[in-house]
Image: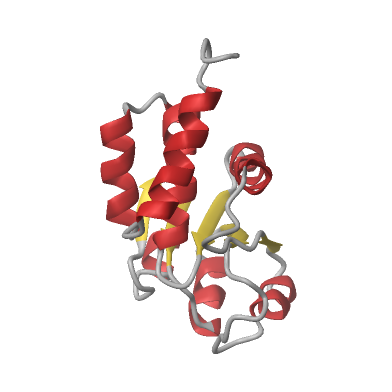
Length: 158
């Protein structure tokens, strides 16, 4: 049987980053169909709805019976509210398989840093290393995730 990761392994920067979280770049309709067949449950998309895409992703995902969540992330407009929405989706997934993507994996990497640190107890450097493995290459996304994680760690209150 094909795993969810194998189903999307052709996606740019595809990575099985956590047991129930697969990350990467923009999937095709065939990859989304294979993901569903392999047990995929949620597609978390960080791309702006106006970004060009090869497929009507929301329609395809819903037609397949998976949950589609779009939380646009754009350089220059990064804030806590956006990260909190992303973290809420990841935290509520529990045992459901999430395919978490943007165009290439860079935005995903920045958003995963606080998830790694706050929810999985990773040290900062390990979280950064994993985010880079996912596709993080932008200093702004790196700082966005790190700053949020630092400010929201237990005991880091005002």
